[in-house]
Length: 121
Picture 1 (cartoon, rainbow, N blue to C red):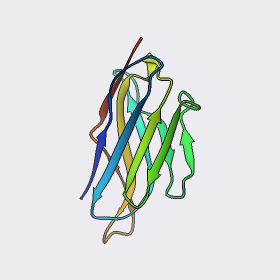
Picture 2 (cartoon, rainbow, N blue to C red; picture 1 turned 60 degrees about the horizontal axis):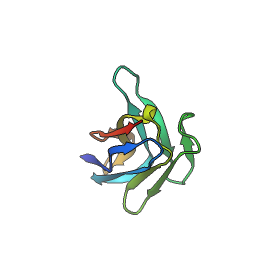
Picture 3 (cartoon, rainbow, N blue to C red; picture 1 turned 90 degrees about the vertical axis):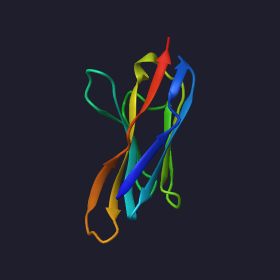
Picture 4 (tube, helix red, strand yellow; picture 1 turned 180 degrees about the vertical axis):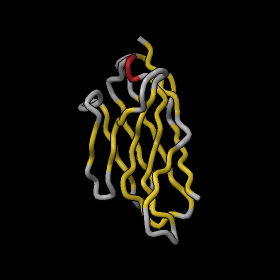
């Protein structure tokens, strides 16, 4: 009922920048938080950045000062600007959204399919 589609991953050199975008579509009544998590092989999924519908943001410690999250509530999109990328940022990045579907009184967590970000040294 809700789909999240990510774009913008790829290969970049250390110190470079990338911008990820994610669009939510479907039977959406409202979206509370949206954000990005990442998971590298052998590692647990970790929070990268989160933003509420009111614009309050939260970042993982490893990306503070380098990444910036933003969203367009009217378009149900969220973006992640990644600057000063490091090889350790290499991971699959997943978009998520806490969505209230039309006709339901509760929120559900939806995930995108993931997009690969590779930072070469």
